[in-house]
Length: 237
Length: 285
Image 1 (tube, one colour):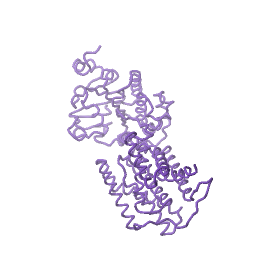
Image 2 (cartoon, helix red, strand yellow):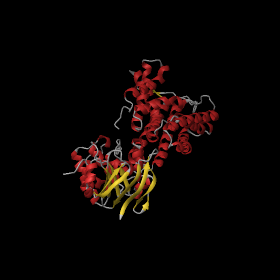
Image 3 (cartoon, helix red, strand yellow):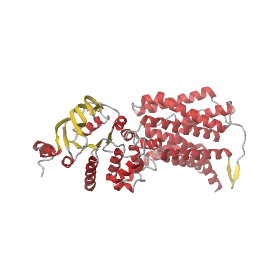
Image 4 (cartoon, helix red, strand yellow):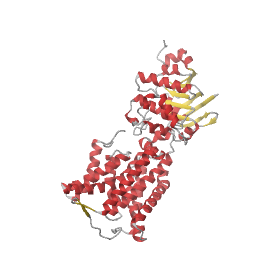
């Protein structure tokens, strides 16, 4: 049973549509990644799901009900949460306050959730009173993911979570994402580092020119000769 | 020495008034991305509403002031809901021009009701106290205490309430606030509550320090903008420090310049900041 399903998506930001027939499916408890060349519309597909790009054709369902073109705050209350690629922390707010903002739609006590985030990302625990703008790129990414987890989403969407990070942080982020999945949160992410991402993924989508060209398990896509040659820089090891 | 200390007192009084206005301008810019040109006239409006209750109805000022603050807040929120709200999806420059129009409307309404002449809250002459050689007017004590109280309340609101934190988050990054699930329209209404209330207080304190005239708010708008820019636009704490800095610099300028050049100080600060530190002195963002 799929948690998120997008079919025949045509979407854009006002001019010509960037997506022209994109498909997507994410099941509960799995990591799905969208890979593809620059300009294929990977981020746009994620934004279309999250109500930040206008969907003109096609439909998106979450847990069986239609969410096409729903506003972000409504989607957050419905169990989706999204981390943009850039500018994804409130720089002048402390780490703790950033996490509080993620829980804005919740009215109950969120102390336990905050402590849980600090146990997922121990680096952040002793920086909780520091403004997020003073942290390193990797730590900011952790704050951003932590903020998105505070609402206890069923689907966490990450736009290039490892872009610009040092290898040490890239490893950490991938490892944490797997741990988050194991706790029962489905993850959908866009990744530039395609080979690495497909290794980590349960399911992968190759997006080309606004269309979903391949959809399969991560392993199958890695073994697929056509995918490897066109999009992963030749046959892998 | 005593002369400089005296100017510092005047500067802090003026700076506090400017700061109260600048907090609203800064938050509104951070959250709605436009320079609210009607902010000065919102101050004028608050000052005149207090005048109506104090001078016309004969209420004491400590009753008239809170009533005027509440009334100005109601008007600010109403203006937002009726006018600015409809323009939020358009280019920010359209909001800017509509606020310019609103400035003219507010000023004209004040002038139609109260006339163009200068008025004061009361005509009683209060002699200044002399403290360690400094002349301190009782009104100044009221202004300083009132400003300190409002700034402390603002701080508690911004740091310790859900809505206050969301307001800082939104001033930081409105798009990220939206994707975090923050109810941005609600935060906007609260921003008008804070901005409108502080503008009314600033206007009343300015009227208490000097006198009421329909152009009073328009004339102080430039120093208010200078303070917001100095403090880093969108940063309410910077706006307070910026206000104090502009107020003190304006008063101290009379040591070397003829007093008629006082308004030029704020103008020079704006020009200098836009050239060298456009993100403000306290830019940590």
